[in-house]
Amino acid sequence: MRIGELADRAGVSVRALRYYEEQGLLYSERSSSGQRHYPEPAVERVQLIQLLYSAGLSSRTIAELLPCVDAKVSTPESRARLAAERERIDGQITELIRARDRLDAVIAFSGTPASGCTYQEVEDYADALASAGSGHREGSR
Amino acid sequence: MRIGELADRAGVSVRALRYYEEQGLLYSERSSSGQRHYPEPAVERVQLIQLLYSAGLSSRTIAELLPCVDAKVSTPESRARLAAERERIDGQITELIRARDRLDAVIAFSGTPASGCTYQEVEDYADALASAGSGHREGSR
DNA sequence: CTAAAACCTGACGTTGACGTCAGAGGCAAG
DNA sequence: CTTGCCTCTGACGTCAACGTCAGGTTTTAG
Image (cartoon, rainbow over all chains, first blue to last red; front, side, top):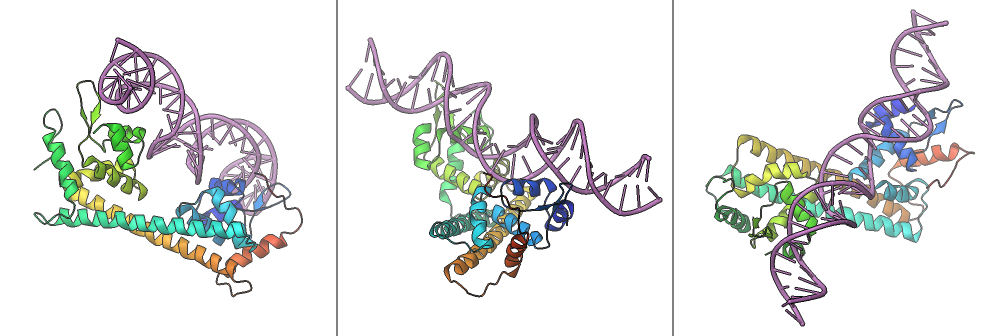
């Protein structure tokens, strides 16, 4: 298939595909006139790339890790790299859960008026803001 | 405390703190000579900002949500906004877990030679690459 | 008192993953 | 043939969260 169809089916832009190739993440055969052609599994491939991007990997990192997936070439370094990225993602998940819980607490509070607040320091800061006194925009309360 | 101490204690740069203030995320009192001064709870405040940044929120979004935390001002829109961001983070967690599982599969494979592979499409792509055959340029980086 | 360290306000530089535009070819249909 | 869509290669634009530098003031240590 040509680049437009791949872009549609994988849900990315044509520009992105050319960028992936430039970064060494995607390979394409060329017709005699220079047009890119892709095999079916390239769709999944692009989706994998997207997944890794969304997990916060840089194109350089992805380029380093994809050979492990493609050719099953696993050197000690690449395995260490895989493990490191896995750990990074794990840490990121933990952080996201913390952030989510934090937002949940705020949501719970903003839903139930006059309930006990678990986050005293927040009120501290709000109070500090209030006692800052003059010449600044005031909140309620 | 002054900006340098806050930066140290919160683990961010001085430049970042000035940027946060510029974006309306952080407030500071000024001494007569114009130097910024912060109360104790600003440390926690900055850490909260960092947490939200790391969760992928933009400074604009954080600026919109922080009043909910500070002054407990919760309009219907702000509550919707909170819920929306919560859901976004939740989705991001799901995606990260998928990415992590995917990496785990690769790790498991690269660790155990000649094991069954769950990701057939990957091999498909590798095969397609291989059958692409001859003129395969390598290493343009 | 003096020198170093910290702080101030601009303002330009950086990085990554593309968006977008320009100008020039290719390709199936009528 | 030619119309219209797709594709090509550069190459510059963008945006966010700061980094960094310049040039000047303030605070602190000795």
